[in-house]
Length: 362
Image 1 (tube, rainbow, N blue to C red):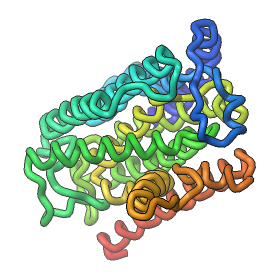
Image 2: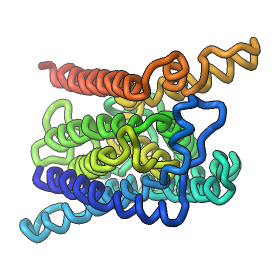
Image 3: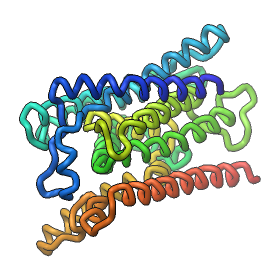
Image 4: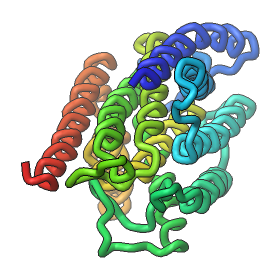
């Protein structure tokens, strides 16, 4: 429990203190955000705001995770060291953040709101997802638990649905691409993606810690235990990510002094995908991260309806822009969607707990 608190506190502190340095550095370098011309006109005033702030989130996240383990090792020599599950999830987020960094850099260099082409971004995501998927099926512990499973999962593995090794790699890519794009679509208002992500990671601190308390690898496993390899370390990762997002939100909330850019949104999407796979909660994450799902669906529905009828379902997609064009203030839209994100996250936690009650016969 101590490591979880340390990870969150250190990541929060690093994110709050490091982000202003990035703001000044990126401002001097001219690393400003380009704004879509067809978007809400109020956003045009944001042109030139420093971007690539996701660097601060990644640095803070790694710092929180490593410092927590270092302090824990100093105070408790037999404490758990960094695990395969925790490191793989962090490396997946970092790999996708690197893809996002190149995307952001090209946008700045070309002075337009388009960076990597679809093929380049897809290949970057594919590479990160494949490395994660292949390694996640390795590193079995003494209980023969791997960081990931070839079975689809809701709160536990659904054993009748197995992908096989090749199928799992494909599934992993689809999950990584879907969640990365979903968080990327959500990152259109000041503080929206950062605040929503913090809520999701807070729920996963609770879920992972609960899985640790009732783990099948314990000395005396109980009924309803969880076959998760490193639940406590995943709780540390989630806590570090939560702290990093909250600290970044201090500078990213309206009016934003810096944007996370694709560097941050793709990294957070990768973290969401990685946590869902390693905690065996892939379908539950659809509920917990419900706001991200709705944002992505608004884009896909907009495209589908327009291609079929040449009419737009929303004034603009993702749908948070629809409300802005309808006359809502940006902060009003942001707060309402934060509430929606919170409702989805809590409902997902309720489903997780109700499943445990059912499994234990309580």
